[in-house]
Length: 271
Ligand SMILES: *[C@@H]1O[C@H](CO)[C@@H](O)[C@H](O)[C@H]1NC(C)=O
Ligand SMILES: *[C@@H]1O[C@H](CO)[C@@H](O)[C@H](O)[C@H]1NC(C)=O
Ligand SMILES: *[C@@H]1O[C@H](CO)[C@@H](O)[C@H](O)[C@H]1NC(C)=O
Image (cartoon, rainbow, N blue to C red; front, side, top):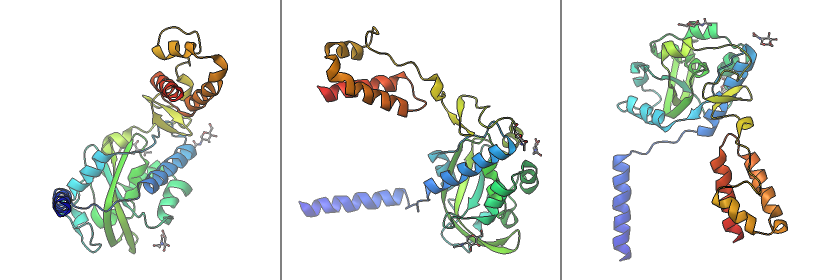
């Protein structure tokens, strides 16, 4: 019996690995932190009003895997990357997650931010090795909202004829070349966020915290949860009200449904 189970497990495991080859994970948090920090700094220094916070997107990850399916991404000497083609609804770049401080990226994003320089450095088409040195600039276009990266090793001489190493291939979307370049807006950071709101200089999806639906207290009609609440004795519930209030304030940018969800949770907990 045990042996049969083990067989099953082995079979299933090997089936899974046939269908989906093991993908070396990338440091998602490092990438999101790095580029959102760069974007925030860029927006503040150049007064960009529509700089979106990048969110991780598994579709872009999948896209990256498909685009490079015939390439050897684990051999840093491979020159497969020369044949990449930029998308019409996303742009790609290479970075190094093993190195926590990238001089050239800090230089461009923090020390000398400039869209003119970005425009000069990157053209529509992928130029191969010579573009490795500046490809990270793709991460700065304000209207891009999503990013997805996969593991990809490169060690190549490009640009400044220094050996450069990369371990991640990233796609940013949803815009291609023309649209990402044309949609730069200037003004106080985080003030031009269609379908979103400003948060510390960047745009994030959803209504801002100030537009949260007002919280309903005792005596406010309808909803089952409110009626049930009335049956309870006041003093007994005071602490839970506080908890709900704290949780409600903590959940930024969410709607009334979250508030009622929390209320219901608390009542089940009391019962
Ligand atoms: C950004 O805006 C501030 C405040 O209006 C202004 O002082 C500063 O010069 C602006 N910077 C740039 C690069 O436009
Ligand atoms: C990290 O990058 C900097 C320059 O960007 C370089 O001087 C340094 O040697 C790199 N460190 C490693 C461990 O590769
Ligand atoms: C960058 O290039 C795009 C089109 O290629 C243009 O619309 C935009 O104005 C340029 N921006 C700057 C700052 O030069």
